[in-house]
Amino acid sequence: MSRRGELARQHLQPLDVALRHHRTYTWLRRSVLAASLLLTVGMPMWHLRARDAESAGQAVRTGFGGARALGLPGSAPDVVGGPGAVELFGLELVDPLPIAAVAVSAGPRWSLLWLAAPALVLVLLLGRFFCGWVCPYVPLLAVSNGLRWWLTKLGVPLLDVRLPRRSGLVVLTSVLVASALLGLQVAPLVYPPSVIGREAFRAVFYGGLGAGSLLVALAFGFDTFVSRAGFCRSVCPGGALYALLGTLSPVTVKLDRPKCTGCTVCDVVCNLGQSPMNGRIDEGCERCGKCVASCPTDALKLGLTLKGRA
Image 1 (cartoon, one colour):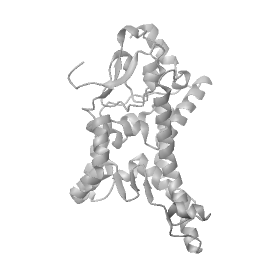
Image 2 (tube, one colour):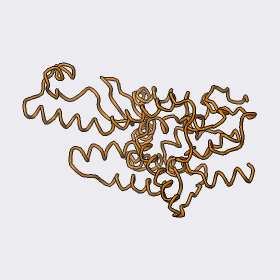
Image 3 (cartoon, one colour):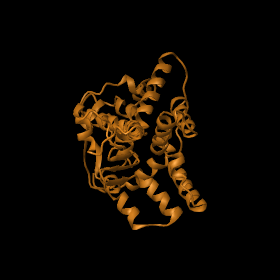
């Protein structure tokens, strides 16, 4: 990278960069994230409303459509859970990390593998997409990036410590080993989707927050003041597992080098430390498409690449 490019990278913040291209992809991703957040927060509220209605004898058993036609809240919806583990009208979908933790703490079960199969297939094909498309912590990360941008504009010095690339694997291994030794579920205690889902349930049903909110606050503070997106990039055990499983994903960001001007904006907007400008995209890429959308010369694109071939 040229000195000019390095200086530009040091002074740019993600919010300084406009998303110029592929807006359909960008808005699709944002819509999925919004749905994930709505599922996380809305499901407890819906279930609470249905429970109260049933207690008052106001609920009906005709399903959501019939209840809506009668102006009643209806019984509990046929959707249970959050982004990490959800049951949709009888179909159960479970995050691979909790499944792995259960397998090492209580022993492997074929039934568990079937629950994780849909998510595993998607991760094998799309890599670490869950982090950029579904995780309910991503909106908080966007707020963290915005706060960093605002503080930088005010002249407040902020750190951006880069932890070792494999630190996430150390955390993942520690979580699984602890689960095996203790025979307990450790992953849900430190995994943001599980923590946020549990805290949302607690807030709606009990009107307060638990210890999990402290972990979320610490992750937010770490990302804001110590290392931009550092928790997601280098600490989150789920992110480490998805990166490991998605190593052979054929979906990647491709660089059209003759079009590249070395402006560094693609590197700046990446939360996970990838360097699209230099063609360095590894298993840490979350396929969010922000680098592609931000490139002023449209030199980047998402495409298919067979591993081992350029």
